Image 1 (cartoon, one colour):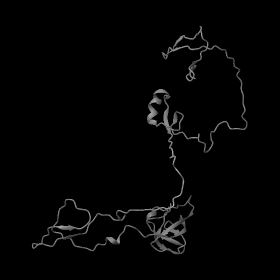
Image 2 (image 1 turned 45 degrees about the horizontal axis):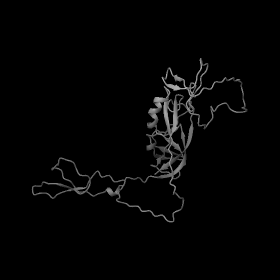
Image 3 (image 1 turned 180 degrees about the horizontal axis):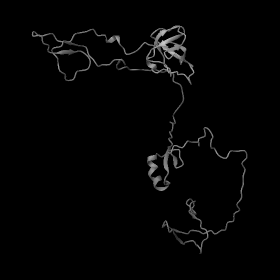
Amino acid sequence: MENGWDNEINELRLIDVKGELRPGYKLKGLVSRLNGFVNSVNVFNLQTTLGVYRDKLNDIGDRVGFLNDYQQRISDNNYYQKFAYSIISKVPYNVWKEPVKSIIHPSGFKEFSDLTIQSSSDKNMKVGSASSLSLLVNIDNTQSMYTKNNFAMVYEDELFEDGTIERIVFEEGIALKPYILSTSNKVIRIDDISPQFNGTSNIGIITSKQVSFASTQLYQLGVNTEGLAVGDKVGYSTYHFNPDSTYILSIGDGFIGISSDTPHRVNSQNGQPITITQNLNFYR
């Protein structure tokens, strides 16, 4: 009901009416300019008594501060804000946007859509188990992930009597775009060594040890040196200035010397030396 009018039962409630309304009278709205006829009139007096009633013991008045509560949200000035609302509907946003904004949309608010998507299952759907399973994989062609077709093996034609060459033959690779042929330089056939390279690296972890970083030794790490060798790479640490190029330069009794261009960054605190330990991987 809004302003005395109940749209569901077509009933109008009036207060302090001057005069008498009878069935058949015509009513006209001064603001809406709508007309209507009185079908029936029911006059009554209502007396009410206002009071206070409370039946709430040992309960919390609101949900403010409750963890994992759906209604608790941090305002983002967008979806979660006091001047926003969301409509849960099966109708998409682009369908109801214009009717809602032109009829009931409150000015200054931002509208959102919580679209409900429902699917129906096949009535003939049954749950069962397959007696057999076969898998067929068709491989149309194969290609190495490490191959880069950016060069070609070439050779020259036989020399003419005057010592010139008419053409250079490309058996594979990418075709050349227009180019200038230099007749003063010769192309020498060389051995193809490309199969020796596949783009992978065989460097792997050899051990993991507890390492100590001392502020008094920026180019040394305290560690059990068993199994380590000069040239082994030191794994990542937050205390390395350049962790990608730190390697063992020398090995001593209970410590290793690291490359001179990668000192660690553990510094003294208030003039007092400190030592920090950390587990690191070593690679070879």
